[in-house]
Image (cartoon, rainbow, N blue to C red):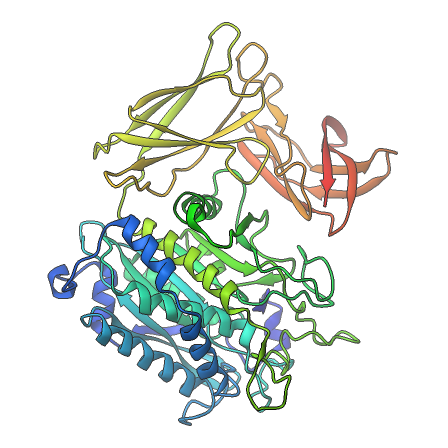
Length: 579
C-alpha cells in the first residue's frame, strides 16, 4: 500500500506526471454495461440464482483456499510487479501479471455462461518511465438496467521494494498486495455464477504504490463518462496475521503478535459520512447473514480515520470524486513501509514480502505469511456485503423529531418511500462509530421510545421482500435535554467525542446552529493536571464540524478537551483512553 502523496511528491519523483490522460475501456461493451446501456437478457445465467440468502451461503461455501493459494503462486511467479516494470515479457513484470489476471477473468467467464465482460481500463501517465498503464476489469452485468449504479470490488496488483521505481529487485508483494488481488479474483470466479440487479465490477488496479494512479484514473473515468458508482470496497494488505516490529498507527500490539479473527474497515469522515455508512452496512450484513453460522467468528472494527496515519489506499480517489468508498485491511501489518529508517527489517515494501518459507528443505513452501483461511474469511465478508448492496434496493429519505412526551425521550420518524417497500430499518448511534441499535418497522411512521439523553444520530434503510436492506441514508442528529428540547441555547455545542472510550483515534465534533463571526478556534486537549497535550485548529461553520485527535497506541487514562474561540474557553468535555 502507498504512503500518502502530496504535490510535493513531484519534487521527489520528477519522473512522474500527476494527471492521467486518455482513459478508455479497451472493450467498448464493458463501458456500455457500466453505463447501463445493454440488454440484461444477453447476460442471463442458464440457471438463475438470485435469492440473497442462497447467494450468501454459497459464497461462504464456495470460496476456496486452494484457489487463493493458486492465484498467489501465479502472482509471485512474475517476480516484480512494479508499475514501471517490464510490459513485454511473458513471464516477468507488470505486463505479464495483468495479462495473466485478464486471462483468468476470461476463464471465469467461460465457466459461467460467458457472463463476465473483461476489459482493460487503459490510461496514460509517466510512472517510472512507462507512459501507458492498464487496470484489469471483469464486469458482471446486472439484471435491472433501470438502476444503473454499480458496485466495485478492487485491489491493487502492483508491488514494490524500497526503491519506488526499482524494477530489478524481487518484489513478490504477497501481503501487499497479492492478498487483495487474489481475493478479488476469487470473488470474480465465485460471484459470476449468481444474478444481481446491480452490475458488479471486479478490478485489479495498477499504480497504487506511485500515488494511487490507477484508482485515480478509474475514478476520473467514471466521472467523465457518467458512471454511477454505488459503493467501492478496496482490499489492501488483507491476508497477513503477524504484527511487525513497526506498523502505521492505528497499530498492532507488538512483534509477532497474531490476529486471524479481526479485520479493520477504514473510511473517511464522521457524522453523515456515506463512507462510514458503507462500512457500517458491511458489518451489519456480516453480523446478520454470516455470523450465525460462521465456524470462526470475525470481529469487524470500524476505524475512525480514512486510513492508517500517513498512509493511503485506492479507496481515496473514489471518495474524492464523490463515491462511497472504504478499505479492508488486516488487523496486523508487518511493517510501516518506512524502508529508509535505520534498522527497518519488516517485510512490507521489501523483497521479504513473500508467500512464506520452506521449513523442511523439500522446496515446498509450508509456512505461509499469508493466512489462507483468514483471507478466505475476508473474501466472504466482501462478497456477502457486495451481494446485498447489489440487490438494487433503493434508499428512502426521512425526517425525525423529538416527541415532547412528559417524562420520556422518544423520537418520531417519518419515512418518504416512493417505491413502497413497506419495511424499514432505523439505525441509531450515540458514542461510537458503530450503530448502537438497528430497529425494524413495517410502517412509514414509527417511534423509538426511551432513548438516552445524549446525542442520537439516526439513519434509515428500506427493506425488500427478501428481507435485504438498502444502503443506509445520510445521518441526522439531535440531542435530548432533560425536557426533550434541543440543547443549543448558546448556538454552539461541543459534542461527546466518538468513539468514547476509544483507543488510537477519536473524532471531536462541534455543532453550530447558525454561522457566526470569529477569528480563530481550536480544541485544546489537556490532562487532568491541566497540562496542554495538543491544540487542534477547527473551523466553525453551520452544522457539524469535526477534527480527529490521535494519541497513539497503548495510552490509557482520562483527558479533557475544550473548545476555545478567540482565546475564550467555551465548553469542556472528558474523554477516555482505553486500550
